[in-house]
Length: 163
Image (tube, rainbow, N blue to C red; front, top):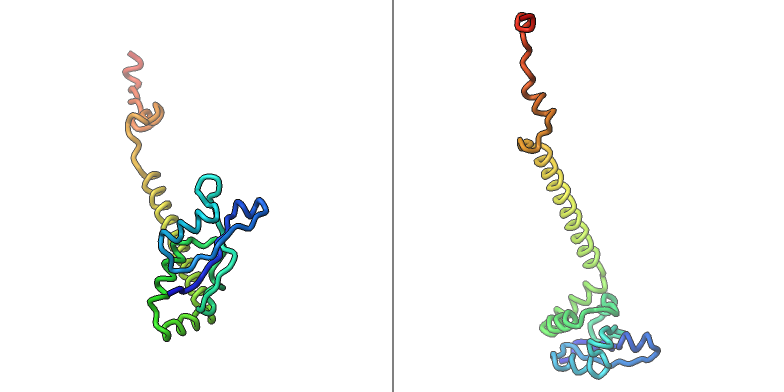
């Protein structure tokens, strides 16, 4: 069962002025993906990159969230997941996609995760700085004046000096 299709285009040939591409139906087998890439000239040597110029399928709103540089393995995984949904679940998915709230939620979660990571790094950095700055200096690293300050020379009494 085809969930959606994508028109895959050879990026290198496109840059040279040629539109070379084919439609790939998802979910796809490894052999189908490799065959398509071979047919459009993406050999991993001269031409390594591709992009997606069009999407088509029955899931309303899905294509608003897909870009021209999607990973084919991830698209295939998405197609497998969608293919396991029943019609009611697909309607729910479409409602969520059309509402658009899920993007805001994911972006907020990502922003919070990034901020938490930044705070943790800052706290750990301050803790490490505090530990390093408060370490005792090994005797071999002390300067000669430090030794004098720790053990000042004893003063002679005047009687000894007069003798």
